[in-house]
Amino acid sequence: MEMLRGIGSGMILAGCLGLGLWYRGQLRGRIQALRQLVAILDLFCSEVGYGRSTLPECCRRLAGQVPEPFGESLGRIGEIMEENRGKAFAEVFREYMEEPLGTMSLRDTDREVFLGAVPQMGFVDGQMQLKVMESSRERLSSTIGTLEQENAQKCRMAVGLGAMGGLFLLLILL
Image 1: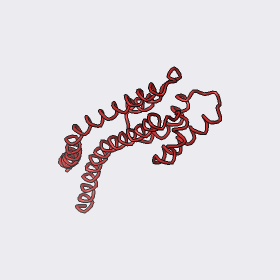
Image 2: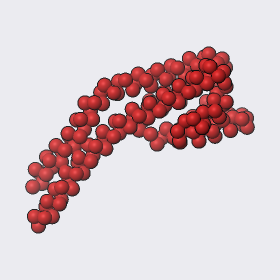
Image 3: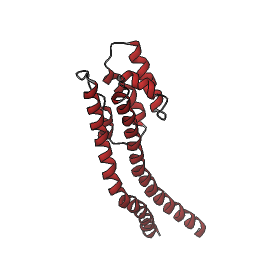
Image 4: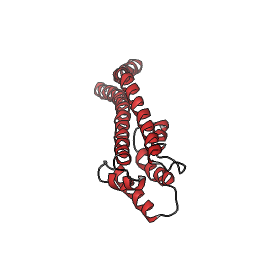
């Protein structure tokens, strides 16, 4: 009986500690995901600003440069826009980027800032496209800076609370 009690106690403690570690991973994962989005926007800005490429051309060029699952999605966007099915670029971009964005540890506001980086049809000027993308990139970078300051304390607290919560639960049960 004592052996089962000891095993159960260890499992409760490990589970609570694991929950704290999982939460810490989610906090760190969001920062990593935001950095990846900023890097993609940097590539778009350089293609539009220096390469003078259209957005569909940018997608085709960047498909091989960005990590998966974004590379595949950008390739599909470029193909669809090349076929000219009559859809707006922003609509196709949103449709095909929502899937890879859904797998990341992001908030809805983060996703909307990234998806809003692609200007709507009213913007045909390359400079205006560039300004909109740079604005989105700056907003995401600002979010990264804020999260980095907050997360150092939150990560330590998450692990500590997980361990203390497990110990508290053991005290109640035993």
